Length: 123
Image (tube, rainbow, N blue to C red; front, top):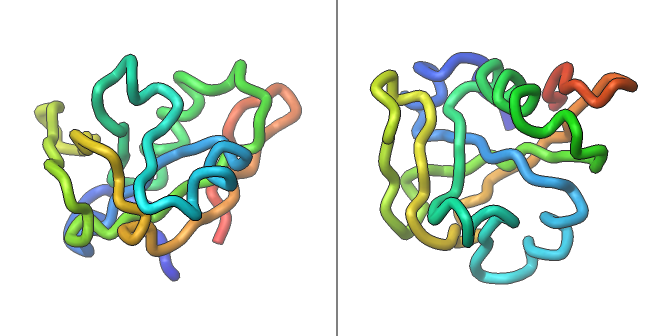
């Protein structure tokens, strides 16, 4: 599985990415449907079209969370509920409903620094 660094290439391939704590995903992936921990509060599932943007987002919101994280690779054509871009640049798709786990076509580990910052996504 190849990942796409930039959002345009990912969008052309109909791929998006979702960041999740590894332990949470490990307990969720065998189910038919997945919702992230913040789903009740947010009302949707956050995604990002480019790996570079994902690292930036992770550093904005998740540095204090010391858990190990994984990146899920999602086939947007296989997601069974509504997907909307609520940002003008259309970099951050939101999934409005539980994610069918059959749409997850890959996962990658995330490399973090000792201070908790996110450095890279590995293949």
